[in-house]
Image (cartoon, rainbow, N blue to C red; front, top):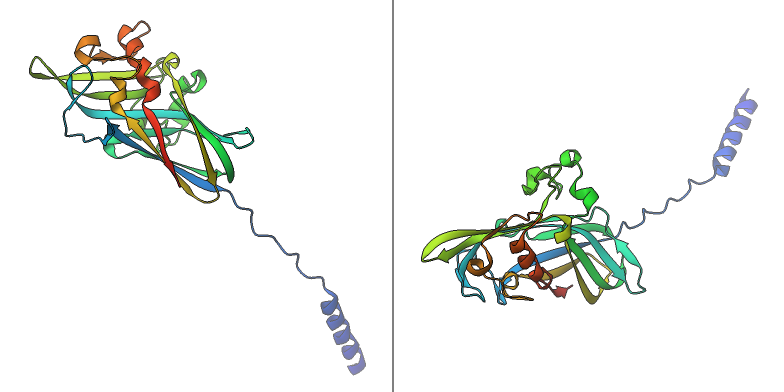
Length: 250
């Protein structure tokens, strides 16, 4: 009996000694880096103050009260020309409320030579049902309050404020909407993403009134909500392409 127990113990020890090691599991691969893009509102090169009355190129005395954007289609161009389309690349900015930045995660590392984005949405997204989006998603109407309904779609850009009209305070309001008024902004800049990074862009609000054309509130119209036939918006939108400026990356 003793001999049997000894043989059994030796057999168990031998089995244990020959048991293969647990396979080594590599740590999960990096999911990439993040990019924060901050937008700084300015007027004629100086940081914008919401309490200050400015004079535009048409001699309108004006102040800003609401500046908001819906952005989409953020694309990074790699050094070799390959395009990286950021997944769910949407942004909602409300500058007076301090919502002036967007953060994109899980981006590839490497060398890049340009970035672009669109102020506006394509037709499919613009007329999709937003009810399925999370309440904190940039395209949630509960968050941005920039949705006209399924038929009308979204407002892409809001510029509102006050101006002096014959000495009295009056309001101006420009709501940029409809796919024809979307604008894509491209910036050819070399940058390398090897860690979580930050990009800064300025928004030159004076350019809405002095750029390709000189647009005056009293001269050209104080109100437009992007009707199908809308001469005020047709003039206002001409200045859109000079509004954004790439400033820095680190």
